[in-house]
Each structure stands twice: as C-alpha cells, then as structure tokens.
Amino acid sequence: MELGHKRKVKEFEDDKMPSLTESLDDAAGFEVDLDIEWESLIDERVDEELWFEGWTKVYFQPTIDAFASICRDELGQEALQADLESVVFKNEAGMTGDISYEDGVLTVDKEPCTNMDKVDKRTESIVSVLESSL
Image (cartoon, rainbow, N blue to C red; front, side, top):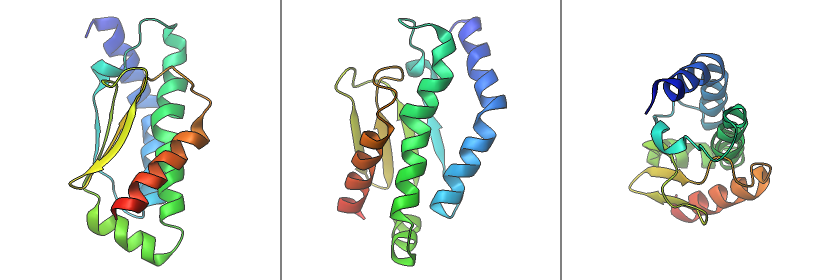
C-alpha cells in the first residue's frame, strides 16, 4: 500500500474508528474482534474523499445495525456472544460481493464504494446470514 493510502487509512482509524467500534461493541454487547483488510478496501477508481463514507456505509453501519437487530433481546445477545469470534471487512469478491458466517467469523466482502447507500439491504443480508447460523 502506498504512503498516501496509508495516511488515509490512519486518518480513518484515528478520526472515525473509535466511535464506530464503540457503536459496534455496544450493539453486540461485547468487544468485537475486528479484522480489516485495508489494502483491499482501497478503491482507486473513486475519489479518495469517498472512501470514509464507503467504509462506514458498506462495512460498519450495516454490521452495527445487524448486531442491534440480533441483540434486541437476551436470546440474540447470548447467541451472538457465544458464537461470534471475529468480523472481517474486505473486498475480494468484487462486484457481486459476499456476506458469510463460518466458524464464528462474520465476513463482509463487498466493494467499498459501490451502492454505498444500500445500508438497509446489507443490514438485512447480515441479519439473515447470522440468524440462520446462530
């Protein structure tokens, strides 16, 4: 990853990540282990000013909203806490993207700057995948 991209990632980690990870942990009811494959999230096809919005709307907000939905009651909280080991954000699947849950790992594999405003659709997908696996 080139230096300019590293700086954008660091800026996001410093300025945006604390509140986003706090919201993620609050929604789950415990500290979530997060693995972000930053290099795959760099989308040079779009202006880098859109990266923060994309990373937030494509990865963080749908996951936060899905955890809030799953954990709306004690049964969901207990199921998620008992089984979820980590969350992975990456961009390897390309245009079609993929959301999966296997061996305690939720993977959100989506393009970071495509269909950014479809937060609800991604949230529904994450909820569906988790509810069928927990």
